[in-house]
Length: 141
Image 1 (cartoon, one colour):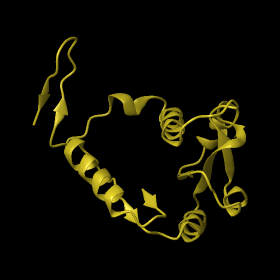
Image 2 (image 1 turned 135 degrees about the vertical axis):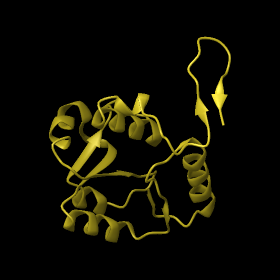
Image 3 (image 1 turned 90 degrees about the horizontal axis):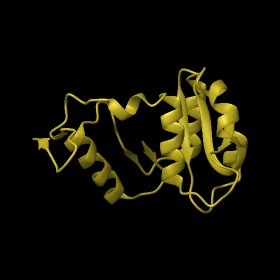
Image 4 (image 1 turned 30 degrees about the horizontal axis):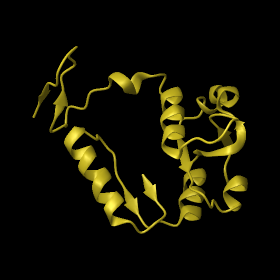
C-alpha cells in the first residue's frame, strides 16, 4: 500500500492488522509521491486503475482489467488532483449512483479481480486465525 499522506498512524494500524491476521507480502509505504509511484508502476509494465464516481462502470471494464498481470488501484479522497484522471489507464466507477465509500469501492474491485478467492484465503503467517462456527466466536492464537 502506498500512502501519499504522512500518516504514521494509518501505516502502523495497517501493519499491525497484517501482522496479526497474516499479511504475506503486505507493506505500507508512507508519504510517497503519488505521481512517482504511478510513473514507476507504468514503466514496469503495470496498469493503473483509479476508482472514481465519474469513471466507466466496473462491470463493463473488469474483464479487460483482469487481463493485466500488474494492477495498481488508486483510491482517492474528496479532492483528487485532476492529473490522476489522465495518468490512470482506467477510471472506474463501482456504481453510477453515488454516494459510495472509497473502502467499499476498493473491496468490490478487489473481489472482482480475485474472483472471490480472497474470501477463503488463509495466511500461514497469521498470529491469529478465526475458526468458522455457526454460533459464538472461535479463534486460535
